[in-house]
Image (cartoon, rainbow, N blue to C red; front, side, top):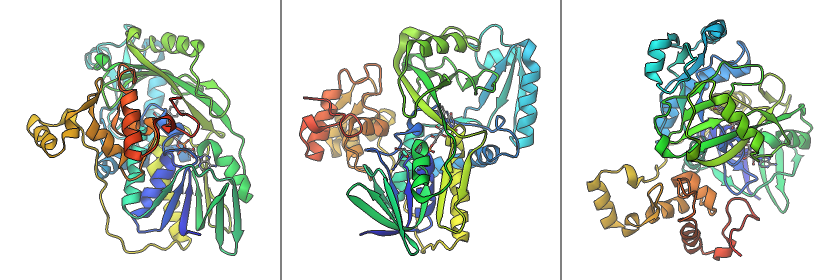
Length: 468
Ligand SMILES: Cc1cc2nc3c(=O)[nH]c(=O)nc-3n(C[C@H](O)[C@H](O)[C@H](O)COP(=O)(O)OP(=O)(O)OC[C@H]3O[C@@H](n4cnc5c(N)ncnc54)[C@H](O)[C@@H]3O)c2cc1C
């Protein structure tokens, strides 16, 4: 049976950050993920904003990890060779609610957010011509940014693998035993052993805690639904536009994605864990509320509806060590968890080092970024096609993704085998037609490259085969 120093349970952004932090220090570790790929929980369906940090209540873990995570992101993205849109964020309001904006500004100062300013109407509407007419003031926070949340998570896991770590997918932890100093972690017929465990299982974190007798917390689940607009709407807004936040959350926003789409949402609707359906009421709420901040978006350009689930436990994050053990856990990592994840990882790894975790001397290996033929110079593309004609065959017409890029994704460090996993890496089926044209071709390429029959190729997790 394989034995590791550390087993991380859960391949969302928090688990991925812990995995990357440990493998870069030469720690022998494994990441165990229940799904067919990493980044399949809350991490795949959120706004993708690296929050500046004016929102959390001062002196909470949310405030502390938000600010530190925001500071860590630019260097982390540079190291991973992935994009970050350093566009800042805007919270906007009408004349009556200026005091709410000032309160947010002061909270930001207290939390240590740099460079914020309150902007008045003329400059504001020049920055964002599609703001609603009633908007008079905006809080601009230049340290806010936009990333691709799932690609960040994938890149962190890939980096961990090329630096010696292991990722086991389809490993749903269902039992943990302890013999002496060592934990044995089971998933049905499989198991691994580890000296330390870090529970980053998001929606499943309570169940994992229960397996070792660690505290369980009261959990609430709140769904956030989105509308995604086609790239023809690029430029509708240039940065995330928030209304003034309320107790219920940060409100419905309009924002650009890293790839030039526009996103509207999220709603905040209490739900069951793992309920990612979108319904007519959610769509109605998005339309009604987003138009309080921006002019009417072009809803004819909606190409996708999707939802993510926030896992909330009280007012703050829970990031702790179970006393007198090598067991660490995270609970209730809701927003701003994506922003906070690198800082949560830094904190947990420091705790483990104080607790006797051993690091080996290690030479860092940089992760290889994906080829993107669309943004290459004509000359470089010509050379690439000469060396491998698969980069000259366009498979996804909307996003202009070639067969070569899809094959690269299949052969990448986590060896993904499902359509959504390939989509999250290099974007086929992500465009206007949502796979109407290219899905059969993507299935065929996966089947050929992975040596599996076409009727066994899944959309995502086991049981989601597409063809009969
Ligand atoms: C609508 C919405 C919008 C948001 N917007 C933002 C934002 O703009 N900025 C921001 O900073 N934050 C945002 N957040 C919060 C952010 O998405 C989450 O805080 C973050 O993704 C949580 O990451 P995680 O790794 O803790 O959990 P997850 O991403 O859910 O990962 C947990 C993983 O554990 C796995 N798992 C569960 N049980 C087991 C088991 N038994 N064995 C093995 N694996 C298991 C799951 O399959 C999953 O992959 C938003 C959240 C939502 C829902």
